[in-house]
Length: 297
Length: 276
Image 1 (cartoon, rainbow over the protein chains, first blue to last red):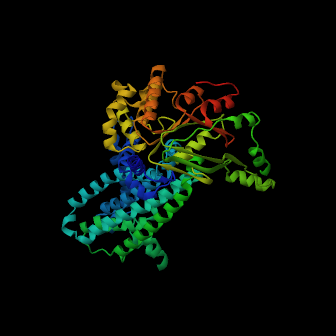
Image 2 (image 1 turned 180 degrees about the vertical axis):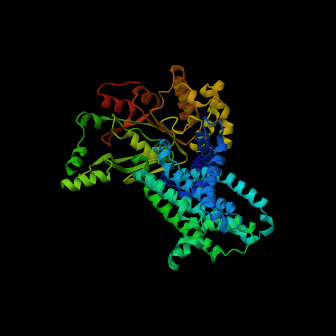
Image 3 (image 1 turned 90 degrees about the horizontal axis):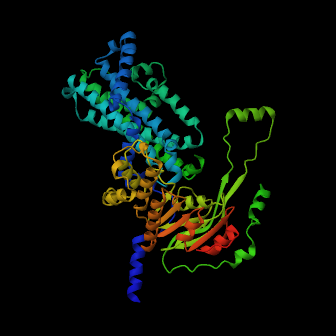
């Protein structure tokens, strides 16, 4: 009698307690699903490049084409390349930040809807889908960073670099990642209810390369904006990240005499803080709407 | 809307109250509760996508805001399932069976009451939901296994069994887009039954493949039962429910009409004598 009772209780223990299904720790639970996450990323990449002969080479062709268009039109025709040293590196280091942001924003926004088959049938923490989409964007981002780094090194990056530049790069990457994910989660959830979200995001993405100092210098903007607005402009996380990447990659290749926007690292830090707060809010909204995803899709 | 609600509380005439009352309840085993469905209510808003254009036209024509009614999919459903039981959820189309299963799996949230489950709950809700056409059979086994909550080691260990059970050895490294529908379903089902959950939610999927494979599936389900797994089965197939379930719950318009002996419940539902 005693023995059987004991056995039963250990059996109960292995099964755990009664819990409410469909509840997760949100973004944190994604860590628990690391293996699944990596498989979903693989799948997304496979789907993206199915039946493609060049495959991943496209991730190089697209940004390089974009770069040459910007460089020829802005740098040569409009003469921006004469206003500073190594304009090509300046352009490329900012451009890849914005590209990473726009791709993250776009794919995360579509992620819930494009995985509706799974969302409707099997319970998984739904944050998995935007997070895996961002991983895909990251897979496209790293080759661009590698190209940038290569050209920076050729242009004497190692002679001018110190720890502040490294911090700037890391902080810039963190800021744009968190900000992109935050907006992606928020709009991914809204897109379930109104597909207008997708179109809205496309419009924002169209503006993004012009909104941040990628082709032009931030100092050009300050001549046209009042001081307080200029502060906001520099705190916008994508701008802050682009400026951090400029500082980390492009600046050490120059003679470092050009005036930078003031408090660059501080702005980056605040931009990162803003992105984190936004991620927190986005996750709260996502969690609220999450329960209705399956029936709305 | 109040009128609608009133209608839905009325028992449909097709089931006679006497016969329902005569259904014997099934004694539950003295094991831990695995699924607790506690006075659960679920409503859907009858949805129509509203667009700005519609709103504008309505404003111009001064029409009132249309009343988007509510539809009660589950109405105060209340039962528990203990470890080792296999319970059939039966009822006609639109009675709320699948919605209930989705609520138990966590895909949908309930509006009233609450649901609790214990252990690892996995759904065979529409086999192959997690399959991707662009991946090979092998890759899909891993992806689907992970979706059903298995770790890489667990999938590695079960891999040979999964492949053997599905009988698609030759096509393992072919993309599943080239599979016949039977092969596709066999592989998906095979992954699902090997995911080894404590509670197995099965929705209309046992009609997979040809006769020999169906027999194999049935055998596997019986094996799971013998291992003390808990099964919740939704099926329109009377035979399957009779075969697998000792207890059946009859739903009608979201209300629980009966909970008891499978044969008797099915007899009332179909209006004719049903025997094993």
